[in-house]
Length: 272
Length: 225
Image (cartoon, rainbow over all chains, first blue to last red; front, top):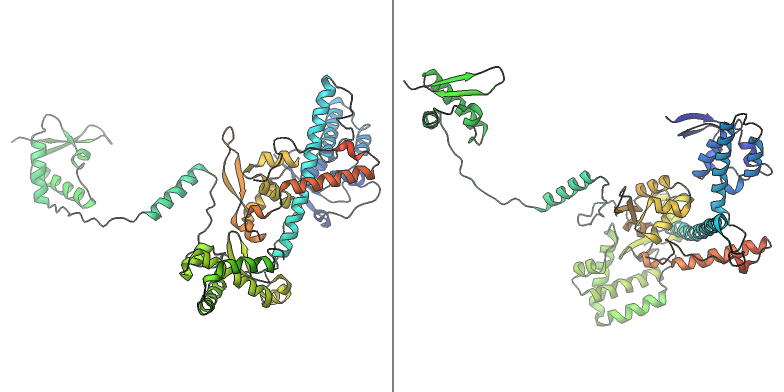
């Protein structure tokens, strides 16, 4: 369950540690006096700090991990609390290390073995990520500049009805929705051929004759009402069959029988 | 606004429109102006050739020549975006236009732009891959880019989880005024800049810049798609 907390910047215990010396410009979310956060788990202010950092409300480079670590050290009275504090501080250090490059050079480093080697690999990976991040920030800056310029070049709105415009296909994400989307596309393409089917014209006397023939020659194997209507193609034909059957029962030619409620209704021809 | 210079447009136009006589050109030009004025989306050369009933070569020549004329004398521009041609107002006159048509300016957060840059250069790419590159949660940024219509789901990664793969849309090209993705500078250019910035930082911190050369090798080393 998520813990909803209503925080203000002033009463936040971490806020004093985040900007210890010179407070930088306040990021946009903190310009409000009240700021809602939805933490999956809240065990202390470090959780909130990590949450804010992961969502980029706080720049990791502006957070002093050392001061936070020092402030938590005496507070943990039990081992579990101390472990939680350590874990939070480790997460904080990891986040910071993602942005800050290691200072050692691989080329000049001494040959490393075991843990040192894995550390070197991790350091290299962090360095690469930091480098890629920086490259993409440059690309993002370029896009921002292009967006700024092109936002001033106004064109006829793209959502205007043009009748001939090809709308870009945006695929839904669920497989079932994909299928429905594909089905709709196919149905839209297909034009039904004009087919004319001559309609059968059943009458009650006609149906009495056909039912008589059917039931008479199936005396050994009783018919159910459902089976009798199996060849009906419309509601009207079922009604006609029903009326014909009632007439045959009235005349005493057919006997209807049901073993128990909701069981099939059997129709038996009565030879007189 | 960047794009092709007047000289290069002129060169392309004379190459292609040599065969169009003056009288026919005037009529076609006016027709083309009307078509571009009413079109709510960029029109490809093929569409223009169908509309004007001329060959694609002639249609391209006409639209380039018209674009050149507009660039020289009009507050409107004919620009090539998203694989087609469309008429837009010149950005320098935007203050006047916005008094009549106060359309809100598109705003994207820094993180959304970073995610968009990653998708642009690595498409198709999944969310875990984007997050591996950035090191932070990117769901919010991806969601807003999807809502803006700048990216779309182009498929699913095979394997466990079938992660969604994202790519840019035609709207992305229109919004950023690009003819195609190839109009963007190659990723290597940004990597060079990043290397320069890192070297500069290290120099300022007193380190040896020569030692800290970073190679962009790895799963996302980047050649532009």
